[in-house]
Length: 376
Image (tube, rainbow, N blue to C red; front, side, top):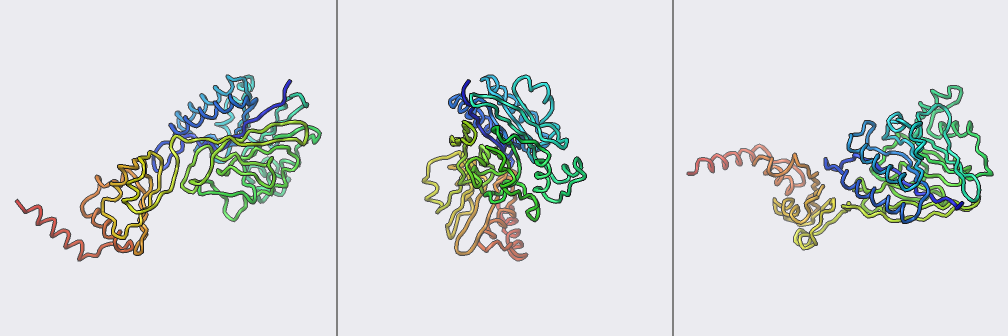
């Protein structure tokens, strides 16, 4: 019997869109990559720390993608552990949980006041994998009414107090919460006033804590308290993230090593900026881009011109000495769908610090358009 190796993932957000563009093809590509990493690294088990889906009622395509992903992992002889995150529906995630345990897939069930666990064994003895799905204080208070619970930390501490953890064994925790000190992005949902903060010391009893919720891969205070991060960039605030999967080797008690394997997206999410002519000389790219130009007098069709070189441009900005004008590039707002008056208004705002044209300007435009229509 050999020592066990784990692959730690989180925040798949299957079914997510960016600017109304489905990311399912990108997600399918990165999940295939993860299966290959699991094969190459000879991982014995995969830990998925919440936010499997983007929404609590996922579309059929997202569910089919996750089913295929887990099936490929299990077909390689691995065990898979899954907890629900704040984007997931716990009942949806735990559906058929009792039945699929026989296949080596362990899913967190609806919270009943206790924490579930599964015991594995390798050459160094037992490893207990604990599963703590995303919990809100109200959920815990409902199950543990005698506890004083006002914050997320109160809730997690109450659950852990009622959990008997054998410190002589190696203990792994799957958890989907916000740990104080973690580096966030615009992609995560946070509670008002920081009530969702949980101090890292709460998890001192665990040899490895497989965290989900924060999209940037990172360690919190120690290498063995770690966010896997999302496998893809889901907002422009994540443009500088280096996405990865964490490989965790469990040796004897107190000896855990962690390293990361990079993930490469089908389309990267990037910020690029410069003068229009310089940008048009860059290589053609189908990455998801936020393009900012710095021309003092940009042509009115600058966005259309750039879309030839960058067909998946999602956001367009003009920043110069006079104006800062951001435009979300949406199909419903394409130039082809706008009236002449709307195009003129856009151009006027572009040149005048985002101020709309006045009545006199619009009357002059209407007069000019009528004269053009009357011209034989």
